[in-house]
Length: 310
Image (cartoon, rainbow, N blue to C red; front, side, top):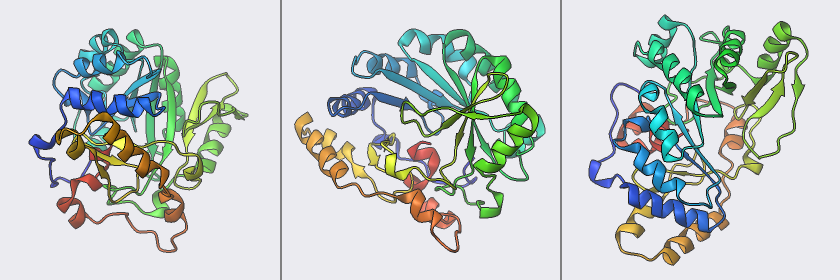
């Protein structure tokens, strides 16, 4: 969760569904085939299945996914699937109710677990994202694997990243990929790496019982050189890197009446000049403090992870 005091994006700046669909279509015309609706919490957006339907109608998008905290998922899983959503990822960092309350400042773990069960009933692919923090939840890897297996989901463990909003981050709180593999091996036996066939950020592994797990190790083993992802915020700023401090204002182009060709040209110009290596640069810093101080987050909400999407 972000700090208790932070700045909301102005409501008038938020893109409507048609603007989001139009921009997504421009990206699709440039070769983008995968889109993910994220946040913040996307299920707080009223009538979200209508946006899903707009995006699902674009045949160029072959993979349409959503990441959610799961609290409202049980109420919306069926309608999202009917609207054309392909798959769902639920953020779940712990199975302990008291720990969940400390991490999220809410007592919603039962509703999240209900949401995961509902998603498994309606979607062929459900993934669980677990950020592992040393001394906080690094003792739950086995429990999370077994829960995911029982729920018909695949868990992905994520190294704690020092992105905007992670104001309590420190290097000694990172539970690295090597330690994750050691913990899995100690309980399940041999862990076999699988080939990465789709360029996804998670490296996948098969446990001795056949269970598949993923590990995203962008803190200790950045994948900047192969990253082909970017993020469009709810108010139309396009960020080429998770660590980028500035974005390209696509909302201004759309609302100025610019044709698709002009939007496409702006995207091509920015992407062709892209030289972002945010995670690699952070790895090489000798004294690695939190990426953005709280004071600056309160001045610019675009630096928050909940604004630009994980």
